[in-house]
Amino acid sequence: MKLASRVSALTPSSTLAITAKAKAMKAQGIDVIGLGAGEPDFNTPREIIEAAYQSMLDGQTKYTPAGGMASLKEAVIEKFQKDQGLGFKANEIIITNGAKHALYTLFQVLLDQGDEVIIPSPYWVSYPEQVKLAEGVPVFVEGKEENQYKITPEQLEKAISPRTKAFVLNSPGNPTGMMYTREELEKLGEVCLKHDILIVSDEIYEKLVYGGSRHVSIATISPELKAQTVIINGVSKSHSMTGWRIGYAAGNGDIIKAMTNLASHSTSNPATPSQFAALAAYSGDERTVEEMRQAFEARLNAVFNQLIEIDGITCIKPQGAFYLFPNVKEAAKLTGFQTVDAFVEALLEEARVAVVPGSGFGAENNIRLSYATSLENLEEALKRIKQFVETRK
Ligand code: PLP
Image (cartoon, rainbow, N blue to C red; front, side):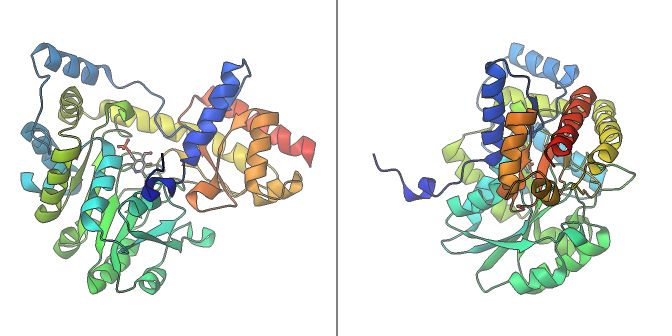
């Protein structure tokens, strides 16, 4: 059967590919350390699990409105008000099956064939594929290493064409862990307002910020920028709830209405028990969220110096998320590899450490290491990487 060209053009996720290979090696009894994870390693807090369980016992096991339960929308609205001082109405919120589905649905309702979406690189792997699935065209703008992998307003403006519809902003960013400052966001925002470009602000790592830095949403800069932005967020990373699949989008009521219509014909609604779980997450105190954040920060601080001490590896210290994104081009050369992809393969086969090659994120000199794993694992992995480089160079 010939499949639709739309899916044959899809690139498989590089994150999942390396994880699958590492898992297969583990199944053969090989002692592999996986640093590919894109999810917190903590269990979902117990109160959240109990709230979902209780809701099911209470008979809350049926369909909800396609755009999500009114009570959860209300909790999301309160969260926006409390955390960012942003006011939204219920018709400006849609609850989705994870932030990924919010993004997918947004691009589907936004793009006509050939419409362009500006995506700064390094980027999260799903943005370009989702844009292509909506028949749009991803336009990459390189965030240079010397600018902490962030793009400048001049670069943004240069990439704009009459077909540009949206600009994706991901801060703190996956894979780099970098964050845009308020001043930087103001300038990028000015460009978007001038050219009437919708800002898609993916704030899924909002709660995971380190070193005393503060996350700023571009929508908080001015009422004009709030009107020009759709915020994407969810509970996956903040509350260690990746498997529950609850995210949301907040923005212009017409866009949200179109997204809700599309959801009503595709997913009906995000799983009802998961919505109750997310409601509990946002109704509870933030103690566990903060404890997880502190654990990530402690790991980052414990291993960062060990990483940059390895020959041929340089890294900018991340301010958020849970990834390190070192440049390993020199280390690859030193150890006799032409490409970082080949270095990554040998690292897995010889040193038994699984990391994700940067090529899938649009950065071929880098690798992504997730510190969503125990300190013990991280320290052992770094020891192995160091040994690998030392013995091969
Ligand atoms: N956005 C970014 C930048 C991510 O890294 C991820 C998950 O890896 C998501 C969105 C998707 O999150 P969710 O689990 O809510 O779909």
